[in-house]
Image (spheres, helix red, strand yellow):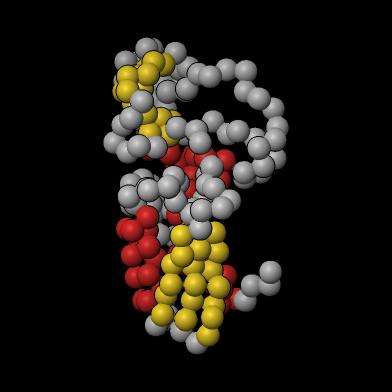
Length: 169
């Protein structure tokens, strides 16, 4: 698929929108923004994949994308929810993972080393979750759910600090 300079610009703008539940990372870094296609003068289609079906943040993401593209001069912005291929935590960029850890949220372990959503690569030998505060892998699960359904609440045994862990999907 050939993209135009305008589509690349609009993709970058839409991708720069912060995630409403994790404002430390953008929609591009989260990997939920799938594409932008210009349909005509001032008209654009955006494809967005939720982190899971029924994700309550999809409405806020849509509104924020519409706003930033309207501000750029697009008069008609249509955001379409795309469920296939399904989003995976492998879609989170390296920069997104770094920002999550820096913010105090343990990023998900990658499922593959061959790129987003590939599903191939080595199987991790450990199921430990590294503490984003001190780096220890001696952590324990406190609750399968935290502030959002996609995160779990854990505590580090070494430094005793609680932290969120973005669950692998």
